[in-house]
Every structure is written in structure tokens, then in C-alpha cells.
Length: 302
Image 1 (cartoon, rainbow, N blue to C red):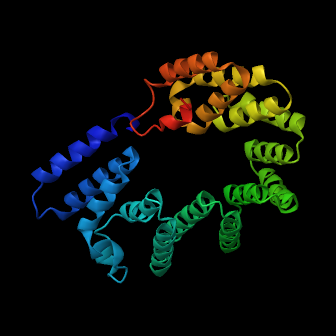
Image 2: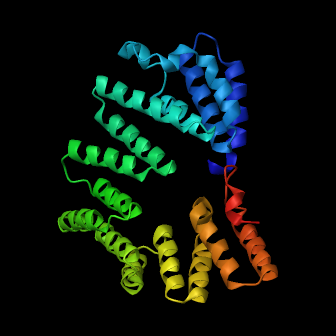
Image 3: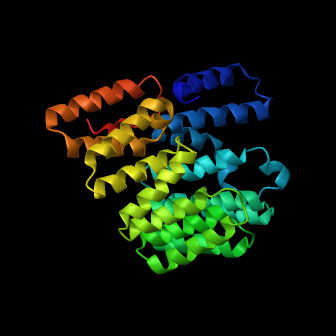
């Protein structure tokens, strides 16, 4: 799918022209596919202009539940997220908040949590970690059941705020919850992140090695391990680790722009300018057959 967003956008437009005007469900679904493709391609201005054709259908939240079903929920989410891509983050916050209220009205708890997490992501994108933490804490209080992802995410946010005490408290909850499951990875990730925040690079390295021993495709763990090795004075080993990760799984690595950015940054630290450029070009050749239309080439730092 990632490699064919342009084709998908064109195909959806052609199908729209061929679809009977009375077939509203098909028309709406085709519009959603086209708008999603434009969003993935980064054509945000065009997507915004095409969203305007829907008028009050997206903005009117007082419709009946039956009328509301006409517009796919995912299309409403896309409509809410779009303004932040056009440098209007507050509009995105407003629209996401409206969607949360809308989900509460129809008692759609799973959707409410999903949109609330998007709100958290938006706060993080705006570098407002305090509000992101408050929102996530409210979610944790509302959904009392064990949720490793929520607790772990809250711990990470506390780390972003430099609040080691509360981060440790959250990760202790992760540890307690992990004992009741056979999956030790969340606990190992929590321990490694906390160790990195405290500058205990060797401890973090040991835990990340354990994660990769069980799942060598974990790009986040590979990237964090490379950071640990950098701070341990093992720059060459850090470069080799990420290079090996890219070679083994170029499709996955190409989809994780952070890993590519980290590798290019390590190249700049390790080599002279001419060699750095050559390394980046080689990296580009490796991942190009596997990345899609929406790949952000800025992460290559060329």
C-alpha cells in the first residue's frame, strides 16, 4: 500500500466519476480513500480544499446516529488531524476534542480512547508534555483495568518532563503488571528507558540486548541501543548496529524514518564530509526500492 498512494488517489478519483450519484455509501468511501491518499502524500492543502466539499456533514455533530453513520469515523479523524499539518495545531485540538465529546455521546468507549490518544500525540507534537501527561493520566484513571501501554506511555512522558520520580513509579506499575503476563518486553523497555534517563548506559545496553535477542526486528530497541553505544564511546559499533538493521530489514527500516535519521546523524559524527555523503547515498539506494510515496527524504539529511 505504501508504494502506491499516488495510484490510489488517481484510481479513487476515476471511480468517483464512474459511480452513480445515488450510491452515496460508495461515493463517501471513495472520497475517504482519496483524501487518505492525499494526506499520506503530503498534499495537505489539496486535501483540505476537497474536504470543504462536504460542508456541514463533518462539522455538524448534532446529527442523529443514523445520519452520522454516513460519514466514516476514520474520515472524521482525518479531517481533525489535517489542520496540524497546515500549521493550525489549535484547530486540530478543537476538532479532536469535539470528536471525544461525540464518542461520549454515543458511548463509543474504544473510539473515545483512540481519539484521546490522538489528543495526547498532538500535545506531544506541540512540545506541551505537561498537557499530554494530564490527558494521559485522565485516561488511566478512567480506564481502571490493567493497560501496560497506557502506563508505559505515561512513564515515558514523565521522562520527557524530567520527572524521574513519577516515571519510576509508572514503570514499577509496568513491572507489577508484567508479572501476570508471559511477555517481559514491556518491562525490559521500561527498565532501559529509565536507565537511559539516569545516564546508566551500561544497564540500558544490557536490557536492550535482551529485547533484541528475543526480537531482532525491534527497530526502536536497535535505535536506543545505538544511542547507548554512542554514549559509551562505541561510535563505530553504533553505526554498525544500525547498518546491520537496515541491511536485514530494509522495508521496515525505510518505514521507520527515525532510525534512518539516527543512522545519518551517526555517519556525520563518524566520518568526514565526503565519506558521510557517500554513506548516505548508499543508504538511499538500499531503502529506495522499499519505501513508499510518503517517505520523508529529509531524514536522509542530504
